[in-house]
Image (cartoon, rainbow, N blue to C red):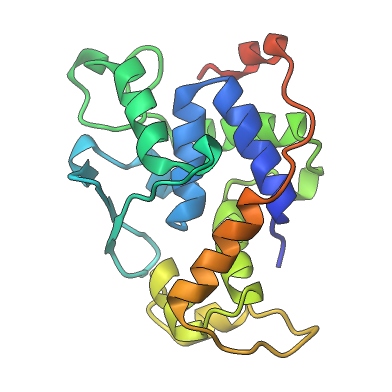
Length: 210
C-alpha cells in the first residue's frame, strides 16, 4: 500500500501552503479526513460549518461528520487553513462548492489530481505516489503505525466493511492496540516534531492555478 511518510506529507503540505490557500486546505482536509479526490472536489460550503466537516464519501463508504482540528503547527491546523481559503475564495460567483477555480466553477476530480501532482513533484515525491488518494492511504497507515485499532481506523476512513481496512495494516510487525485518542495524539506529535526541510521556491506558484 503506497503512502507518504510523515516527513513527506509535511513537505507536500508546505509546498501547497506556499503556493495557494486553496491547495493547502484541500490536501490538509484530504489527509485529515481520508477523502478521495472526487470527495474533495464535491465538498460544499454547507459541508464545513460550525467547526465540523461533513464527509460525503463515495464507493459505498459511510458518510461521517467530524471535528475540524487545530494544531500548534499552522501547516496542520485545519481551521486556520480553511479560514484562509474562505477569505481568498470570497463569493466565487455564488458557487455552492467549497473549492472553486479562478472562474468560480467547481473543481473537477482531474484538476484536484493535477494540483496534487504538482505539489508532490515539488516535494520530490516519486511518480508512483502522485495520486491524491495517497493522502487517505497515509492517514490510515500513520494511525495504524501509531497503534490505533482497526475498528477506529475503519470508522475514520468510512469503510463499510473491516476487510477494506485490514489491507492498510502493516505486516512487518505486530501492532499493540492503543486507544484511538492516544494513537491520534502519537501521530500528531510525530508530525509536529519533524523538520519540514527545504521550502518551495516562490516561482513555483505558477503551477497552482486550475
